Length: 312
Image (cartoon, rainbow, N blue to C red):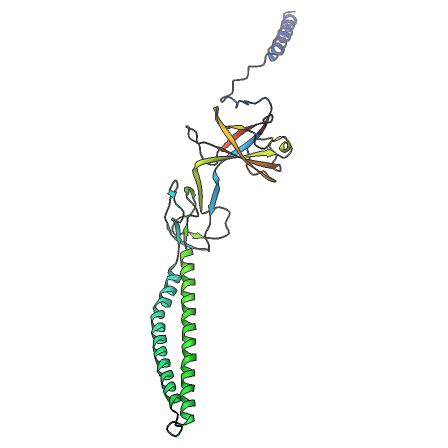
């Protein structure tokens, strides 16, 4: 009898526990607030885009003119350079040896030409004197012809020597030009953003990673990627704002610069799980003034473009 009563109470307690559990499952915990406030869209109607900050006029990927050993790197990250400043030096010992050999041979070639020129003038003077004699009994025709032949031979030798000298000078200038190419110079003023080469490493022409990355970080631009589906919604000249990732409380005002009228595969990935990597995008370039807070080339931004703006 006691066992039956205990079984009934246990069954009743199990029912109560099940009801309490089911009732408690109805109350869902309140989601915690986001760690960072989402960016604020200031426009009533907008086109959203993912963008990336670039240096003005885009970055320059510095590559070597030829493959070779790097003997000197003249710059480091954050170095400011002017157009024509040396960036890095490739091994030039072989070309310097050729240049020295050709340079040393030029004075002797010039001296030989000077001697041949003097001899030619002397022979021509002798020929002129022989031809000026009217009495053929004093000077035979064979003597005149022989002297004329000697002068012609000397003249042709002088012409060949001068041609050889010009060729040697051209070869020297070519070696000098190739030598100058081994000192890679800055194509324009800017700041070194990346240095991916060290002294002693071998630089190759065909490489995916640039040896140096050069950009103008005094002025910036944003390259916004608009999904091709939304491309017709964008009005050229529309204003826009951008927010840095992790700094959504401060908007960056953007000024329209241009639309690149060619749909390209998307390269600037946001990392979103729902993102399609096969998306094709229209790229719009916006300029902006450097803000008071720090920004860096390569940072991703959220861009909001006004759809209802009338640029005119």
